[in-house]
Length: 454
Ligand SMILES: Cc1ncc(COP(=O)(O)O)c(C=O)c1O
Picture 1 (cartoon, helix red, strand yellow):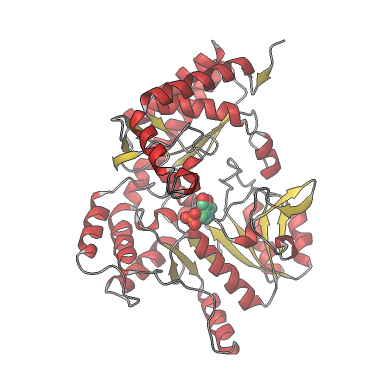
Picture 2 (cartoon, rainbow, N blue to C red):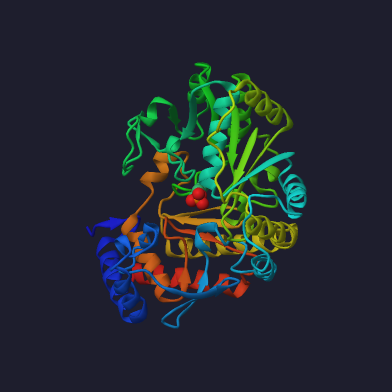
């Protein structure tokens, strides 16, 4: 019997990996030269180590990107279904963003003072997500860090609760995992000197009885979660889970924080608006200002009142929230252009059917090949998973990962002009993505499957 991984002969995966790596090196001489040169002064050869997470022998160096297309320095063009892992998911440099950035660049970028954009952006955010009050930060990580701090200040409770397999950015408090049912630090966590598990509870997603027990202890300030996990593959909420989460958090005086940074793909106003969730706080970053670093967090009127009370009861000093460049004029101007002209209901009217087309297309290829794989999607975000069943939680999602097979697929696609997210098999479609691009990707995934099984 041949060894197989997710229905694919292991020898085929190894062959494809080797062949595609060689091909990648041949096709990218200029990227290779730049990567060599960068090694002299950048640690690991890159300004940020995630640029090495693609599994390629060296990174692709980008020349330019517009809409849903990207060009590298070796003259290859790509259909982009990764969009900088969501940072540019409404397209690369859409006209309104390019114009807004140029206009603001000519009149100053940051002054630690508000501009005329401020009231307008507040109104746009409230209109889109349905929460009346907002604050801005620079990254989704920061938005989550500040919200965690607010939740502790408001409730005067020390702990937070997250789900196994979550990712909310580099916020220290969230770097926990479950191992054999016990909380541990997330493997790989570096330089952390206090025990994060002392103040963060971690449970499996979709487990309401465990949640009830954990909240009943009365020490949890907030539950922080994506409405569907998207960072350990995709884990969708089972019917009733999100309603149960809301009911239990209310019952036990715990605040509910919904991180929409990735699930903004769901529809206009994110998963929250589409599915009528009622979070106390909502955080979102990445694409909110069209790719200009910026994030925001929204909250209810009740929370706003409790924030003011917590401040009034606090001694004067520095709150530990805010950073110098947060809410700078460039970010606010870009966010205004983005929310007024790019992230519109009409944009989703294009993106959602395109993503559906992509998901159903890949599903058909999987079925045709008789592979034990499946496809999940949350609006404009879709993922094919090399396992037969939808995972219920982070542990099942982790078990469904096949890093070698996924890497072989990614390299195959890169070498044929398609970029999908380097983490699992995640795709995004933007308002600029065309049906032709989707059909080409579906055909390429089909071609890859055929070669793996030939
Ligand atoms: C759900 C979610 N929240 C927050 C973040 C952090 O975003 P950033 O790295 O821009 O701070 C991420 C990043 O992938 C994410 O997926």
